[in-house]
Image 1 (cartoon, rainbow, N blue to C red):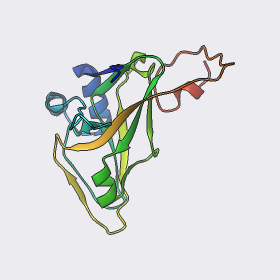
Image 2 (cartoon, rainbow, N blue to C red):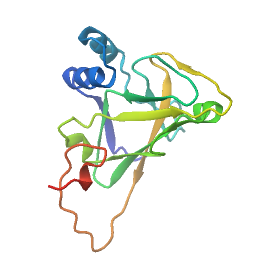
Image 3 (cartoon, rainbow, N blue to C red):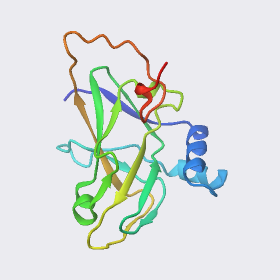
Length: 172
């Protein structure tokens, strides 16, 4: 297997700022406690393609509700690779738990952004059976898969990234 990437935690300062911005009313001690609980993504078995992402905090999500999760994680990867993110299969099957953008795409240059490449996941419990999803801190809720990608023979992309969520479409 090719070893093309590494997961790291973002700095405590970055996570605390993002955590308190995402969850208004949370305090710095609560944010730092959540930071200490961050687990880097891991494969469950030697045959697993996906790296499980773990919730830094517990949450309860009723049917139709959405949550944005600052993971506290960044991915450093070689050029020519992308990290794609999906919900955990079991949660998708039982709750229709899904990423709001269908598939997360983390580009190799995202880690160099001012936000340290902090990966956020916005997910919705779309349960048609009105099931409430309850996850404890440290529970696996999403999975990331590294994939190679190619470019066209006449590709001339030269811009640099600074941020996520549409940052490459902004005027420079």
